[in-house]
Image: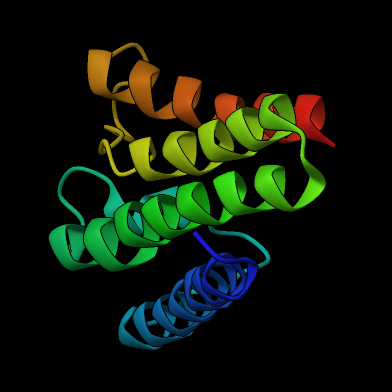
Length: 126
């Protein structure tokens, strides 16, 4: 993959996530970024769960993963490329819906683990 293609995937991931975030926020009456977790868009029972999980978490995460491999290739550092790619895949895995009424539910645990993975892999890659 060329550096240009990897860069375009990073831009696409960021643009898609930001557009989805602001669009879905506009659909929820009373939503505020200051007091509501983004995870609530894709939670079990949320009105736009499926489109948010696809457009807000899954697709941006996959694009981030390809971007991560490109960053590693540009740096000639396969370890950072792998870790950045894992950051993207962890972000994609946050599409597993949390059950906001049951924090010990398996899907909630998986969602939280994926969220923590995003931070951990990014930190290790940086």
